[in-house]
Length: 166
Image 1 (cartoon, rainbow, N blue to C red):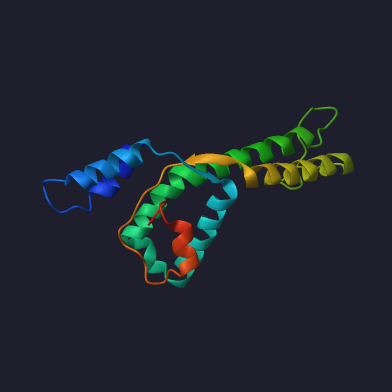
Image 2: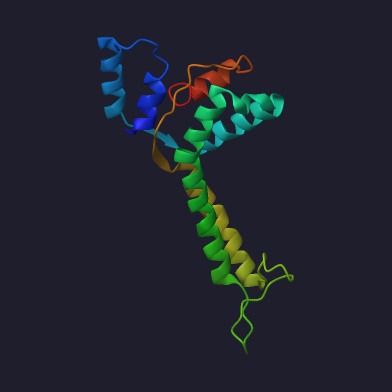
């Protein structure tokens, strides 16, 4: 378990002496592994985005800070891994100039590759498969707990966030 989690959990305690029950809880949580699917992490991110859309000031609260840490540690690396695999597959199927062996792009910004029909089909199939695989991919999640629970949270969101960010 990481020290950030313990800090987030124990930083809310205002006394110098931490009670034995809190120490026990911290020890239990240090040894507990939380496993979630990529699909659940994506749902959490969507729900937080909706909360931020409804109340942009929520980003500046303790909840916002905790979610940012949770996102950076748990969701962002997995999302980047997925995007990197898709980018690699696109490059592998991009058209290449036969004379110069340069990759062909759709425009001068060099952000989108040109594909033939077969390459396009392969990329689409790959993206469908990898998204399907990632939806059920299980990962160990490191919680960051906030004692601040936004009033905007509904019961479904509270249940989704429980034990992870609230």
